[in-house]
Amino acid sequence: RVEPVIERLHRYLKRTRSGDLLGVYLFGSAAVGGLRTDSDIDVLAVLRRSLSQSDRQRLTDFLLQFSGRRATVAPGRPLEVTAVVLDDVLPWNYPPVCDFLYGEWLRDEFLTGRMPQRHSNPDLAVTITTVRQHATRLQGPHPGDLLPPVPLKDLHRSIHDNLAALLDDLVGDERNVLLTLARMAVTLETGRILPKHEAADLVLPSLPEPHQSLLSLA
Image (cartoon, rainbow, N blue to C red; front, side, top):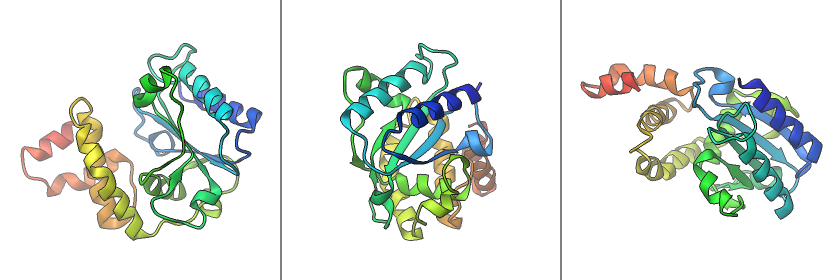
């Protein structure tokens, strides 16, 4: 079940007031459809200030308890939690700065004691555009009233800058990579960020065999 996981995270963020929370938004397949049992639940938190080191440690420890297949608190669903400080993205600069990022692919690093730190993250251009276009508001103003629009040229740069890392993850994550490539193609063509399954439906007719069958299977 998705709702208990989202509610638990939202309650934690409100209770701790980490970073003086300005907004919390659910996006991705959990918000627009196509969610699978192993799909990430994507959440963006917009903060007034950067998280302290103790905030980072507590939030990471909290997420490790109930995110993904190795969760110790049920129900466990894989979470991808991104936090940005509003002043880091408004006014907009590329590449943007991410204040905190949790994902299950980073779990083993976090279990060794590493904490999510501030870093430049080109993918935030896609994340912010996605949230502005279609997200479920859990707290705060409408995302279009809080977050800046991302220039189309920076959206394109983000796709280019993330391509190599995406292809490096192909083996073992084939379905996600193929569907993400389809979404990239649609975004480059239209400027819209669609759910991956919808993007694949648009790309399929343009592909020759056997590529069409492979994407259809994905």
